[in-house]
Image (tube, rainbow, N blue to C red; front, side):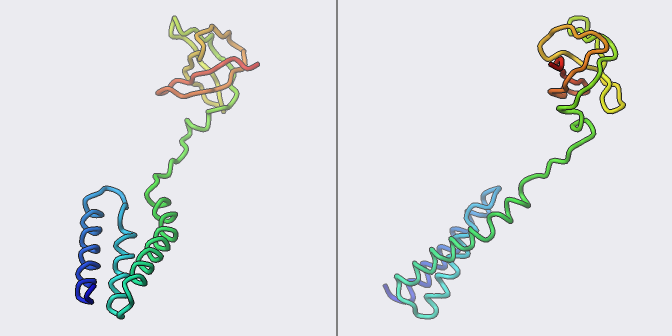
Length: 146
């Protein structure tokens, strides 16, 4: 291919991958843009076509390998545990009989009183030890400790 043709090919690749990146909500083709820039630089330095392609592939893979973990770290939302989450998998003491049918039941966990419901629908008497298996709204879903 003529030298000028490769400049056009690499410039077109940069534009196409750049537009594709701009059109998506997540980072999808930014690494190809970086690789295309490296291919264009290789063409400007009069590298043969096979070397331009090899440089494009290597730079794209390196850019992906180096930046992907960092990008995931910043894009992935960090879930912060709340006080309610701390109750999960804890043991509580039933303060008021837990009866799902009559919408009754209270459990004391970590010094706090919570409304509670039985996970399996069984009635759990006051004074029983229960494990908190889920939180539904402001109610603890519990099962009797074995």
